[in-house]
Image 1 (cartoon, one colour):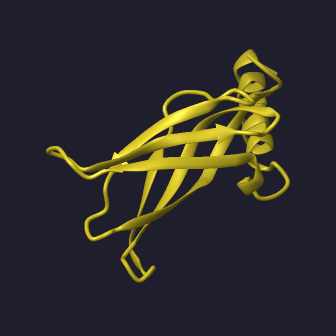
Image 2: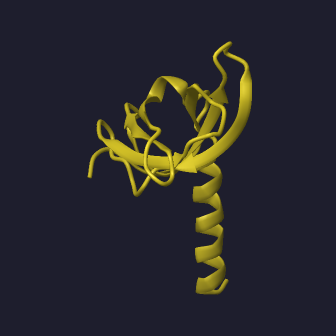
Length: 118
């Protein structure tokens, strides 16, 4: 078997393992955010705290914009910047959703890089 095939098999195996973490990521991540409704492009920005035992990357956020009555206005997705080590946090910013007065933001997906610290 060629070296290229071995590397491909390892990459596919690692990706499959990373996506099958055995349950909801909700208890592993805590999202805090602020609405920056001023400036030329209103944004929301915040942090994702990683309480998992894994170093993660490609943390994708589901951003639900809500109106004053708590009804969904629109849904968007965003990403944190860089990797997040266990116990650390990652920064994100995303355009504000027009008509939204509140947000529900959660981690939709992520990839595991490794277990343990740096």
